[in-house]
Image 1: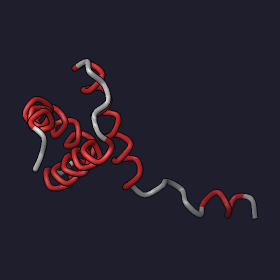
Image 2: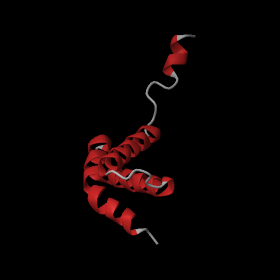
Image 3: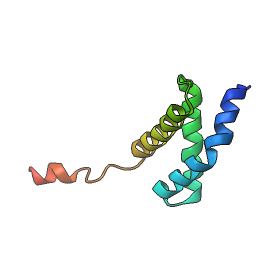
Image 4: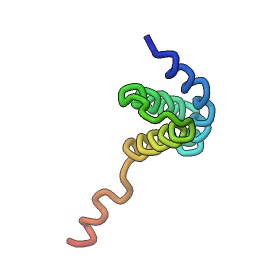
Length: 84
């Protein structure tokens, strides 16, 4: 069962996180997945901050890091070819 406080976080920040994810991903489907993964990460790590501003910043940071981890790295293989 999800703790009541975590449910409040979802209610407060789902829409802003989804909009940010959509701007990063470009598709609603990818944004949905990224938003869900962000809340999953937040639940696993646990919310340690008491202030809403810190929690919001932390959630957006988690989302951005998750996005950066899942996207392909640019130029992979290209740098090694330049030095060959």
